[in-house]
Figure (cartoon, rainbow, N blue to C red):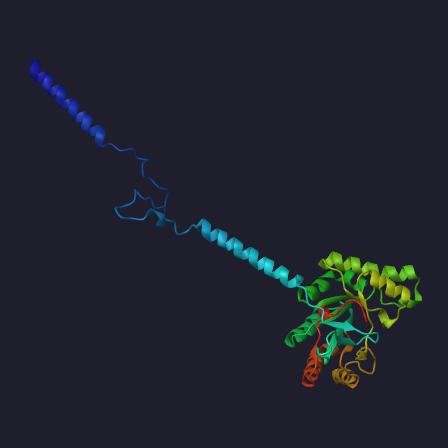
Amino acid sequence: MFKTTAAILIAACLLLSACGEQETPATENTAPENETVSTGPSEGSNTSNVVKDDQPSTKDSLAQTQEQETDQETTEDKKEQQIEKTYHMNENYYIKPNDENGEKKVVLLTFDDGPKEAEMINGLIDTLDKHNAKAIFFVNGYRVKSHPELLKLIYEREQIIGNHAWDHEDLKKMSASEAAKQVTDVQHIVKETIGVEPEFFRPPFGSGNDALKETVKQHGMLYMTWSNGSLDWDKSTQNKPDKVVQNVLDQLNPGSNILMHELPWTVEALDDLLTKLENKGYSFVDPRSIELEAR
């Protein structure tokens, strides 16, 4: 009897022990929805290749960041690149090569009295880009104050900004201090707007004196008027793009410093003008290649 009872108790204990070994915690190897869980590498597998498809690796992220930084640096370098000074301006405002064997058949393109309208600015620069040309856009301070976005447009399209005084008034008729303020105020607003100061100055009407020239020199700018007037501002030329072209060609000489304006008929004339200049063997000097002191 005792042996039978003991045998039954031993069998019951063995049965309970077997049930406990088969029970497994429900949370083990349980993954969130849509996420795969590996129960361990199989024989011969390479654990370094186990990467979730939807997560970039640290190496890829680093490469992407470095690429973005390189692109940004390239853009900055492009804007800040230094152009070799291979030309200078003489006392008559003509542009001459520093090397006697340098290219003499060049012209300098300039546009005064802006910035006025985005459509005209884009029209001029579209044509300049078509001919791989750079120009100086001489701006008035009061216009920049009214439309700083237009100054930014010229700069961002990689053309060159010049100082044309704050107001379009005769600086020669002002006191030295008044005229100096007309110059410095433009330097300040241009610097505040695009981060750089102009390196070229042209007085309204081409009217100046020695005191004004000294102020301009103190600001590290090249003082200039022009040697070739398109007369696009004159009533005889208004709405006559062909006349603008002809006026420039009639005065054309190697090194011509061409005065134009931000006007509808000048925008219309520019492509034809640049094409005819190229056909005559002329190229367009980059203003940044001009020394900032006349000689």
